[in-house]
Length: 295
Image (tube, rainbow, N blue to C red; front, side):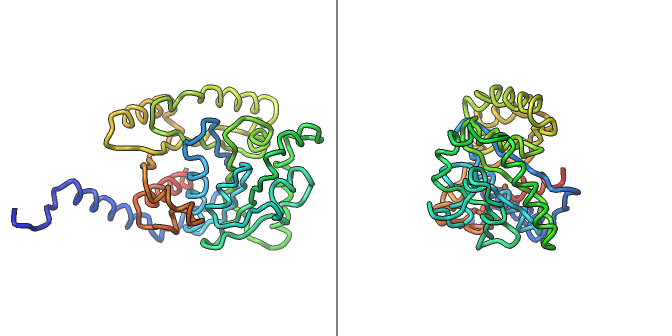
């Protein structure tokens, strides 16, 4: 060895591959959909990267010039935190829209770090919303009606049409998630590349079928994203192959790796797109967002 840089080493080839990916993606404008696409991001299994996926794909699409709204209906409010939007108990939130008939325009906030990215935040009050919704009229359709009204409100005020709306769900299948399924036309399911990844998925798909049959015939599972992928393990490769075999049309080619940067970003009230835009995690979410927009 002469102490020089070995261009055939694994690190060098990874750097080269990332440079090429970055050149392909950064600064690229993505196509606008012909109508607003509304995606519910759901998986009743916790810890699969639902919120992380929601906020990072939303941020990637907005940074590529699209108008994007994130609706946070998880009482934990993690999506609101990651987007840097205040969501303490005194803030008007999606709870007020669902329970107190507020207009969505009263609660939507602009995200401080990224242009064209908006958030309807969740507050702790949502924790009781499951019970409060039970006695309300048209309880499954309240979010859908609020979104329809908000879309009309933006049009009548001369604001740009929203290209994408993402609804971040709690990891359960209660009335909040049912509202999200009734409001959307697409479901995006993040699946972690780990043992038991497909466990619980059949139950989720059964529930989606019931929604399609009784409440929202327009709903379809359009997108599956493989998250927490560790290329060093055979298990991750097997799980990815297994999911692709089951859902050949829905699975995105982009894989989201296990990444310290992705995990750190929310503690700084940011998405990985602004926290470390040149990281592998940010590149992977840009790839996933571009693929989603081009479908």
